[in-house]
Image 1 (cartoon, rainbow, N blue to C red):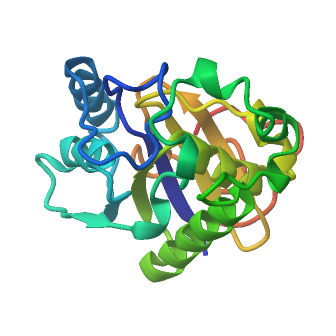
Image 2: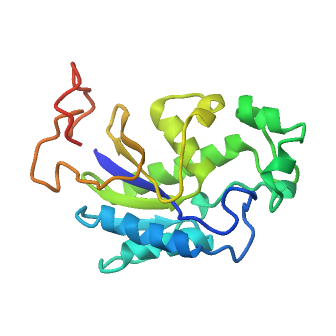
Length: 229
């Protein structure tokens, strides 16, 4: 089975950057964030999608809705793609949180990080990867779908796809409205794009054979391939 996941982070909000918004209710996209969501939709307009799923939080629902506009697809809420439960850290400025004793653990040993009154990052990865794997099975072979989620959730999914220990997930970037593309095969996932802001064209949509990894199996291209996603 080969399933392609388009993993998108939501667009900007007024809290993105200076504050750890977490699961704060009512955090919607800013004007710039809505523009980013529309631009994301335009970048993947030529890609066939079999499903669009999203975190239940407003900013992801709004971003996913922009992608769904003009497509005969509903946005399906996937609770397991929700933002990390940051507990007592929720809504606090990042500059303030950087002084907390837990901060170095989050930076260097995230597999051991448990947010006070909240969730463990290891549990975030477990639930998010389980959601992706279940959607892969549900949609089946040759499916292409978009999942809209949050920075740390996306980084945890990517770390799993790359075979990285969770303690290395801070090396991965996930910017607002950026796209990461992961193709899941029976043997291994292939990360085709990471934190990308360009137009996406998949080889199958263009009627081409992929020049990178084997698009119908699990073998990697020896020598690197032609570079066609």
